Length: 175
Image (cartoon, rainbow, N blue to C red; front, top):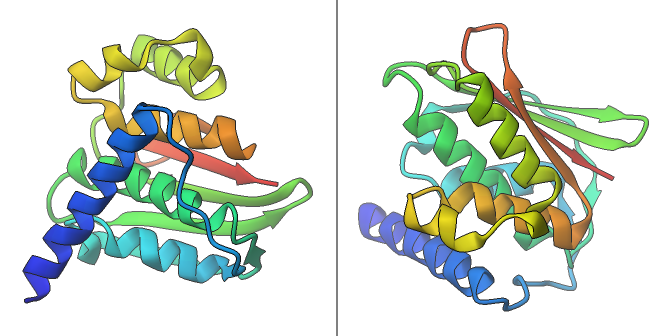
């Protein structure tokens, strides 16, 4: 039952991604959500949830209008990190308060993305309107496009970069 429930959760996330690609607004709620719950819900939405480790929990409240979309975006980033890391390694999540809001860092232990790929994906993340969704949907990179769209709609920023482990890091800054 647990595996079935998890599969349904992943299918819901995929359906929401496809709906977003069609221009529908993201899921919304009126209830604020603890940031730790946002991270927990995002972790529960990926297949390899047991590999995710929250290193530095920091709490705060996320507006209910943004919380479901932030859950979805963080789940996409966690899923990428887990899928591109070596199987026994952990995906580390750090959360800290910064002057401009909250910073969520997701570190994988995978192979570092080539510099031109990092530049292209960071371009998408900073200006999704300059990119065509179909290009990312066709080649299996729908998740990163979804993250870019949520960032655009909700006003948070995402950046990909190399980390100290020789892998990749996604930084999400939530105002």
